[in-house]
Image (cartoon, rainbow, N blue to C red; front, side, top):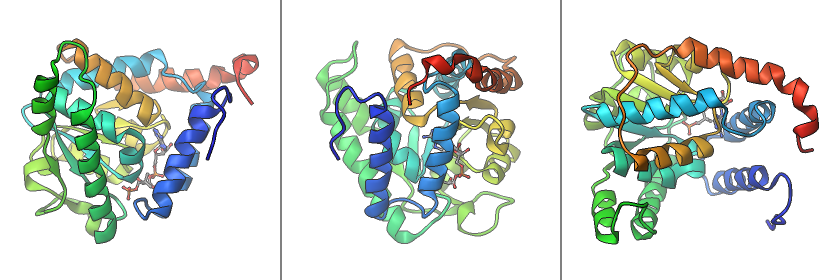
Length: 267
Ligand code: PTJ
C-alpha cells in the first residue's frame, strides 16, 4: 500500500499494514489485529508520542538488562513484526538472548517467527553500525545474539497448556526478562519465579502493566527504538527504589489530560 509521505497518520498506517501483511503470511495470532487496535486507541490518547515517564522506564529497563546475569528479550508475533530489528540491536548491545515465545502457539507460527527473527538478525548484521562501533565490531556483536525458541524444554510453573512452554537456557533461567505485550497470567507467573519483569504495554490499566516490575507505557516500535539509542549511549545503574506505581499514574494522567489537547491531535 502506498502511503503519501506527508500523510498525518503515515506511521500508524504503516504499522497497521505490517500487521495486516504478517497476519496474511500466517505469522500472527487470530486476535493480533484486535490487540493492535486496542493499543492504537491508547496510543491516540497518549498523543502518539513517548511520554516522560515512559522514557524513564525505558532507561530503567536498559539499565536492568545491562546489569542482569541472564537477560532475555521475549518476542511474540506482534512485537517481532513491529520491533524485531531493534530487538536484535538491543540484545546485541546489552548481551541479552532473544527467545521467540508466543501465547497462541502453533508449530507453523513458531517456525515462521523464528525464520523472521533470523532474517532480521542478518539484516541488522549487514546494517550500518551505531556510533562508537566499527563495522567489524558490530557484525561480531550481532552474530553473538542467540535466538531461542525452537526447543522449548521447560515449563513456567503455575501456567497450563502451551503458553507455559519456554526454553531452559532462555526465559526459564533468566533473571531479567523484557516481555513486550505480555498477558497478565504469564507476567504474574514470571514474577512468582522471582524474575524482574519488564513489559511494554500501551494500556496502563492492564494486569500486565500492574504486575510488572518495570512498565513501559509506550508503543512497542517507539519503545525499542528509544531503548536501542539509550543502550548505544551506555550503561547506568538500576534504581533500587523504582516506583512503578507512579509510572502507571503518570500514564493515566497523560491519558486523562488528552481532552485538553484536542487541538494538537490529527484526524
Ligand atoms: O503472538 P502471540 O500468540 O503471543 O499473541 C500476541 C497477542 C498480542 C495477540 C496476545 O498477547 C494478546 O492477545 O494480547 P492482549 O491480551 O490483547 O494484550 C495486548 C496488550 O498490548 C494490550 O493491553 C494492548 O493495549 C497492548 N498493545 C497492543 N499493541 C501494542 C500494545 N502495546 C504497545 N505497543 C503496541 N503496538
